[in-house]
Length: 231
Image (cartoon, rainbow, N blue to C red; front, side, top):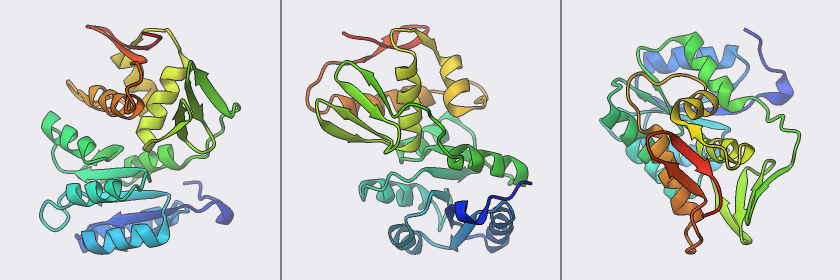
């Protein structure tokens, strides 16, 4: 492993009730150069998230039964846009959708594997090396430094994956992008089987971007994918 330098050690909040697994994850994160903080229940996790403002939150879906999803929901309802990775035991479409609709940016399947987990964490915590400060399309502006969008002067708060998806669309305006291409470039790895993860996030973006009745910019190309273009 290549540990991070001390001055660039992001805090990772881990909500995990399994003490053995929590300790293994804590050690792995620490060895990789991160600053892990472990809590065993949702209430403590939400309090620590507010207090610490971590760079990333990892939540076990089965935290205290099935409260991991609710913890993620509460985090989002509080206005926290910190990237969230959900630990899951099952990989059904229903489980993925439940995870993403709770507000998680991504998920990691058990059994826990150190290298794969740390690879996913690095995807979210690597520095943004974008050369340009803003992307523009019509009345939509994406600020790369604050990771927020503006439309007609209205600020749109985005989660990590919402930002990444919109950024990719804005980097390829008026170009029809297939679902496979979006998955590969935004998520960085393949989803097994059929997945409607993209549809879930497109719906989120549309709800936020069209909140004031603005015209739809993200168009569906039936049977192919999506395109950012004027209506």
